[in-house]
Image 1 (cartoon, helix red, strand yellow):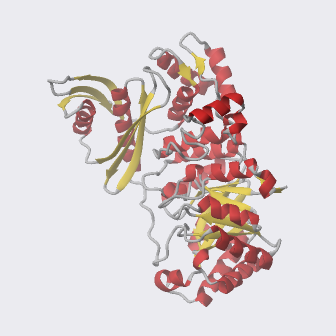
Image 2 (cartoon, helix red, strand yellow):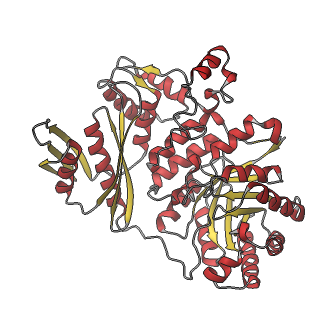
Image 3 (cartoon, helix red, strand yellow):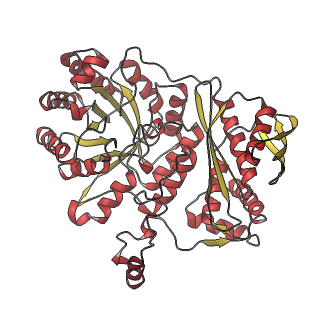
Amino acid sequence: MRIIKIFDTTLRDGEQSPGASMNVDEKIMVAKQLVKLGVDIIEAGFPIASQGDFDAVKRIAEEVQGAVIAGLARAKEEDIRKAYEALKPAHLKRIHTFHSTSDIHLKYQFKVSREEALKRSVEMVRLAKSLVDDVEFSPMDATRTEIGYLLEVLEAVVDAGAKTLNIPDTVGYTIPNEFGEMIRKIKEKIGERAIISVHCHNDLGLAVANSLSAILNGAGQVECTINGIGERAGNCSMEEIVMTLKTRRDFFNADTNINTKEIIRTSRLITRVTGISVQPNKAIVGANAFAHESGIHQDGLLKEKMTYEIIKPSDIGLSKTELVLGKHSGRHAFKARLKELGYQLTPEEIEVAFVKFKNLADQKKYIFDEDIEILLSEQFSKVSETYKLIDLYVSGGSKSKPMAALKIAIGEKIIDKIEYGDGPVDAVYKAIANAVETKSNLLKFEVKSITGGTDALGEVSVALQEDGKKVMGHGSDTNILIASAKAYLNALNKLLMRQGVNERLKPETDECCAID
């Protein structure tokens, strides 16, 4: 049985989703979870794009082990050397370089001939190969490239030292039979000299189908993202590819190294740090993926699960056991549950988490696994708290305008504000905005229940924009107004942290600075 390598690009292509930017600490947290998930390669970022991207790739290279760490680079010397500098600390490292090959891109975007594109691609692969042993090359917009020229480029870069050839469907244009035939021709030409990889976008909703067709025709690596996030309509969804291969091993005769029991936890982590919710009917990880309402389905399930479920919920990490801990639970029980959930914390980190747990347990009767995960996620998403909520009182009724009395700390200074609004959240946000004198605009406000019941731990996500910078803020509490205030302040603190950070560098030419 073939093992298909999983190349995760959540931290690079996934982060290109509008509003999905992550700070360095969040990227470290995601990268470590991806290792637990079992991915083979983590594309940590695009080092030359910004100082923030460079720092994130370098930190991941230094702190994350258990997977190949890849950095993206255009077929330009400065990109490749920058990528190498960031990747240098990694035990296993890969430079992933790319150049467009379609006539559309070469004529209108790069303004170079086929000959020049081929020459530049070969030279930069050789340069990358002189720095690292593991080099991947992508011919951007491959699916709109004339096949004869595409094969010429691919053979040349393999001769120059590329070990992996990634075939991107950059604009989500191809269809399964067509893409499969292209991969078959490439495999016939290249043979075993390089691994054939695919990177499919979902503009026509075919990213997973195209990737599966590629596997049937010889591809040995799939580039994908958690929850299918990514630019425009997103990328090939990792969980869908992985579970299709696992469920239909009889058909594909292929599998992956993914620990599928970590899928749900990873999906929830990405939802939290990016603020991008998963649609309820999303395959594998959607809220309704294992929900059955039809009477006929329910009757079949009660008799035999396999009648209407082709995947066991436990296979992806979903547990039927919801009730875990309460306010009378001690440290031993709490530590044991952390271990069961797969967390490895230092004694100091456990103590901090335990205090947060006890505080929450005083507010609600039952503590669920999701409650613990959200507390830990908040604990390790390190954002400097220049603005900190001290106290909040909100009043209002059907005949009185809602009022928010707010007390917050701004550094060492305590500010009190009272504001009225059209609703309680509006009043709270007006009080915060006036207290900190922010010029940011609120782009998104979203509330969801993390756990069930009237005492559910609620999570609020907000998106703010100021001077072209967009950030996501998150807050959770059993009191949804306090959660709303925490989310707003979290976003404002992130905006402060981003001040002074270099903007994404503009390419020196009209070249696109990220492979799709």
